Image (spheres, rainbow, N blue to C red):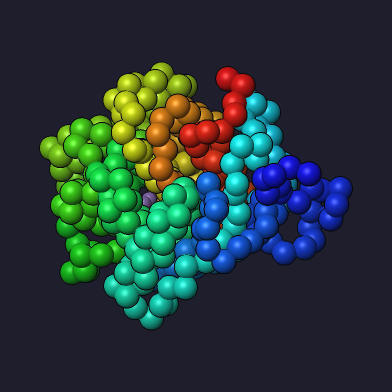
Length: 316
Ligand code: MN
Ligand code: MN
């Protein structure tokens, strides 16, 4: 028996059976004694277009059923050196976005107090602001690798300062992000003005549009990102709509011409060696995901984040 929690194997219980925890891992009520935890935030009340991400965590867990412990590409073996569990969902107030934001920060304060690295199953992108608030309290301003079709730096949405299109504007204003250590990958689509992404550049963010990624491996980009970040604490926020809708249709605000599934894997795998302190995978909306592939993509990317955490044995 390993001293570390293991995903329930497919020869012990059929993969379509049993409780749908992330990777069929054991659950526990809090982050005590864990090196890393999967956490769901079943929230969609900050969404501007198609809803449904409140159902994201459950669907990501369900579609994670086929994920096996070892990473065949990188030889990462996360369950040989980390204690990992699924600690369930944050009990948001589905009638009140601002209260939910504070509930999320308090939940992550507790997780971080246990020196546990949170990997979050969203939920829409509003969730990243309260997580970053907790992160900055623990670590100071963090570097950010943000994959998304959208910059999410709106001043407001419909007059509201907190919504799924504003988290990185607020994070920058609140000093939660390390200066010169933010990279946004996959931005594209239509804007309210041609200058929409220039606010990010003025802040010193590195903006890598989807067009700059087309037809290319992103391994060289990630080498530059590793050099840019150095050894500071880095957070990964992966909006599934950064990927092309041909591979991730189940989301609320779809934009054409996105990243491929392999580019998504290259980004997360390219974060290996960084001081990753947390990550999220947001904006999976199961009602628009009839095949389940969007949730499976999300589950896979969360597993890849686990595989690049500090202390994980890798063969690459
Ligand atoms: Mn987003
Ligand atoms: Mn987006």
